[in-house]
Image 1 (cartoon, one colour):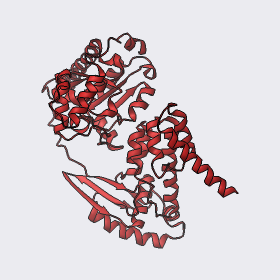
Image 2 (cartoon, one colour):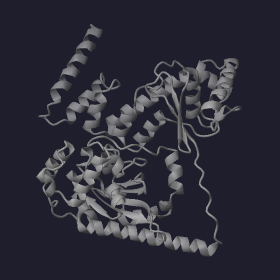
Image 3 (spheres, one colour):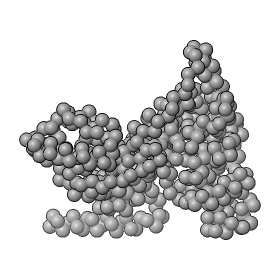
Amino acid sequence: MSSAWSLRREASPENSRLIIERAHEELVSGNTADVRLDDVRPLVRDSWRRSLANLVGAEGLPPLDLASPQLDEYRRAHPLAGVIDMIRGLLVPGDPDDAGVVVAVGDAAGRLLWVEGDRRVRLLTGDMGFVPGANWSEDAVGTSAPGTAIALDRSVQIRGAEHFNRLVQPWSCTAAPVHDPETRRILGVIDVTGGDQVVTPQAQLLVDATARAVEGELLLARLRAREAAPPRRPARRVETARATLRVLGRDRALLEVAGDGVETVSELGLRHAELLLMLATHRQGLSAERLGELVYGDAEATVTLRAEVVRLRKALEKAAPHVRLESRPYRLTVPLETDAHQVLSLLDRGAHRVALAAYRGDVLPDSTAPGVEEFRESVRTALREALLAEASVDVLLAYADTAAGADDEQVLRLCLSMLPARSPRRSGLVARIERLDAVDGEKHS
């Protein structure tokens, strides 16, 4: 596949990158009448202005609208789930790790559902939030092929500096919307992201052809289903309330419940937060003795535990009535998402920059519950090890500026080794390393 895409490498973009970058700077700074904007393609210039009107930032990460397990459930029910193999076969045949590109499939709202292809490219694009569950609509990130293709209802190509968000400007992309073969409403979008090879006329023809092939396959599948069974009335969609427990960097957790267009937020006491976190982490359920060990450090504390569970049930009845706590074993009747698990999910998807931004601090930092302390350390370690192993130098530098990484000499030295020889940031890193070495020397003297 890499050779197939490499054959499509052609000339540089229509306008020089420097002109586009300067035009972008003028627009973002408020000089919307700058003459350099005339040198930008009208499609891109109009998209920039829509982005500006929608108050989209020129830097920043896309919102993560769908987190596991909500993402998995949504993908399974999406109309494009049955044609993913076809898209893979057309756009990344052979070994995906050698494709040289990333192929993404999103829904009609611009939320990415599947992101596959070259592993190295996925790691790099993951740092800018190009991961499953992220919102890449124009309203969220500004000009990009997936979002702009949906906004214009046509295939588009966005080259490097034409992206509104500066974090995305190292990449180019081609995307095409996929329509319902009967109603013609947009079902989703197919995008190919990579280097200059993905913004050639041949690349656009390939992505367009893939979208049309998918629409044809959807129509055939629908006709076969109608022949096999009598028509059925569509089931009424019922929105299920979702609950999220926010424990990162917080002494008192927040329980957020969203559903039917309403969102409520309740603050929990530390003990209730500890109990819910342990039950969210051990979804298969826990015996009274084991839950007592995790929360109280004492398997014999069952009487105290039962009394606290009664109080927690009453709190849940008010804050999240759909989340019920059962006994024997103690378990929650519905999955409870936590912001800490979302960070772990982002790390698994290679979205290091997004994971770091979502990491607001340690899990329930004031808790001394053994189970919480263990989980706290596992999240902290997972974040650090993932960044050390695979993150870009920009993400590592951002981590070094947090409380978690500020005194981590291994992180600082790795940043130093990855920076160019003339980088102005090297001197600051050297000073920090020398200060840590001096403190360490005093401790051992």
